[in-house]
Amino acid sequence: MKTSLRDFCGFRAGDKGDTADVALFAYDDDGYETIVREVTAERVKAHFGSMVTGEVVRYEAPNVRALNFVLRGALGGGGPRSLRSDNLGKSLGGALVRMEVDAPEGLA
Image (cartoon, rainbow, N blue to C red):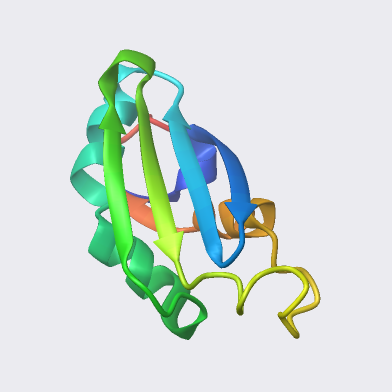
């Protein structure tokens, strides 16, 4: 079934300069297996489209059921240089958990 990440994940995010850092935390083991399979660096980059001009790197942290994504070139040059009205990492985290993925029935 298709469902949004926010149905079975939380997130934390931060930013520094033109780089954003977004971590997804699955609520259980089934959710973690799903995000490992479905949420690749390539899909995250495609999800943000032209908003992220640099590379996206994924790091796995299975001990806390998390994936961490580093998004380079994600903040329009950084806080003081950007013309975006709300370009902080936390807004990118909120946007990422709206991504839809294939998940097992009953996960959400």
